[in-house]
Image (cartoon, rainbow over all chains, first blue to last red):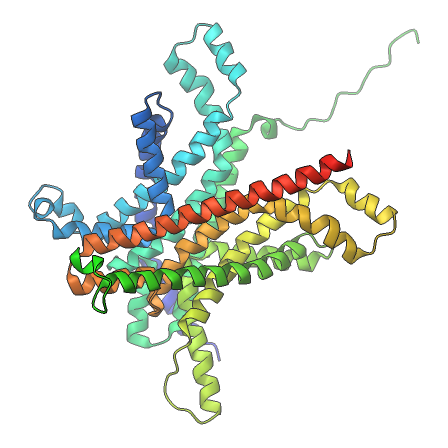
Length: 242
Length: 239
């Protein structure tokens, strides 16, 4: 009934496309993270114009589907002669870079909000204490704000990473041969839709499982309370004379 | 741009507006399916039976771990395969396509259900334990407790999370365009493809989603305020 030879063959072929999916994920994750820091800075700015721009950015990229953003970049930008003749065209011509661009722009909007929540959760007393010790702004950021922020942001950030992995599947719709794209190629040759898509689903599940575990590991490392060794309490000596 | 503004038979405005309605209906259907599934999942996860908890956990892991696009593909082709098989039993031959609206609503609804399950579970856990104990102590029947104590508070606590999930389904519904149903995304694709003005039409499509998101955001905030007021005044009256 179940064709194990075909399933394992498909699984191997789809795994061969895993580097493309991972490449999409990692580059979008890194670019999105850096961009999110920039947007966060603008969002927290004292100037109305800058924080308003960041608000608008977040609203637009969270309010519309990623698919439409991707199509807008891949199909839309190419129709302008200015862009076709500029230095960015070699990048915007490639579906892979367009997908990375769309994914990073979108994930940056979500990440900026996650980081903002974490930043607001940093206890003001700790920042004041740092200032009172005469820490410079850079040192304050590095030693106090960033570590606390990272720790608070981690759970939500792991969700965002999973969503990003799942979003990479959309790149297959602009002819990037990632896991989903290769699955479609195999289906066009074999007409065995369910088996191939189930294999692809299994690959994404495994990938996401690994990412969740990595985040759990990082979270444990960053939480000192969980790191304290559980030594048995020393036996209390009875006080002499009682 | 002119073809977009003219609302005649050949204008694209009409197509996009009717497609926006389809998107809205699709997401609403998905929200309802998700609410049904989600409350089941929340109940399973809070159950005392270990296998039920395991089942709820497995459901959310699978539906939250697979790309939405793949879920839609699996449902679309799986559903079509099933319908073709049933058709063959009754003598029809050839491939029968599954109804895209139904398949889309089901796929997004089941994904949404895995997230709604978490929302309801959190809302249920946020409930003060003493209230239920008090109700049990005065001898309220179980369904009365559900109706008078659980439901009103769970709905109120779940509302902000629901707003998130709703916006997610609204955007996920764009992916159902791969099944050929003419919703907002597909309509933008059609209009963009035939006019070759990709930028304008995708921008218009995106703006439509943005408007839908903003409007529903507003509606949810209103509902939150209303329920919050009712809830607060009721507790205030008791004091």
